[in-house]
Image 1 (tube, rainbow, N blue to C red):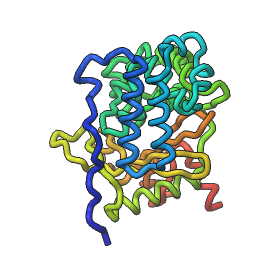
Image 2 (spheres, rainbow, N blue to C red):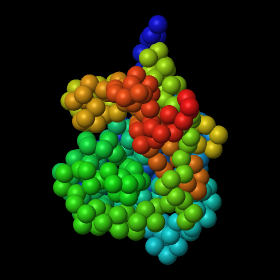
Image 3 (cartoon, one colour):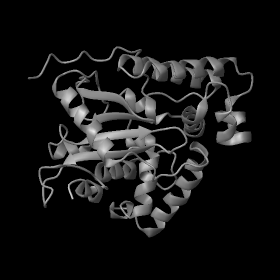
Image 4 (spheres, rainbow, N blue to C red):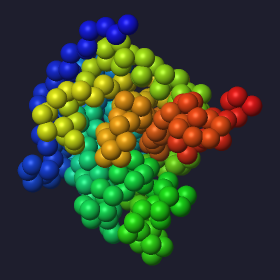
Length: 301
């Protein structure tokens, strides 16, 4: 039986990055983004240690006499990681803000994320192609785009021939090399058992009305806070789960079935996977992790 719907998370109103010209990523501006993320995470029930880590990093940046842009330019990821209170994960976040003027994680938490901003920093992908990639492959992170550029999926999107895909691969290699830990790889991710367990927890708690909800920017003219969000941890992994808000999910009526799971841990590149109910073949009716169907089949072998 479903419980009463959870109240929407109460956080300071986010500023849509598309509505204004983004200010330069100064120490104070980045500290503001970190505090906004802490407030959102706290309201959405994330681990208090994680919330406090963002606040401590914000305080450190405001005290830091050097311009964080100069630190990143001179020493890259390692120099930011070495700052007190930053650490591997936040170093990558700061690099992203310095490099692109956006922070995908915060935009996702507040419902403002869109492919037009996530992919805006990649040469060769304009707004129309960015939207096409998102709607065809259900991607909304640079790490996921990189994986698709290497495994052949990007070439299946209209407008992406071999030359454009090669250009995107090269651009992402340069961009992400600055944003991730030196030893990070795009292939290290949670087991399918863990992903399916997170999917199970998310759908169960969403059905019971136990999760806070956010108002996504896309496909939501009324501005309703309808999208449940779950923050959870499994061992060293931090994960955030949401129903898919892609155009394809809406077209097929699968917004209450497709679950997108974003995950990260220190010294590993961020990643995402989509869990769906298979509609054909021997796995029909079973929850599967897109791109890792073989691993799911092995569970029942």
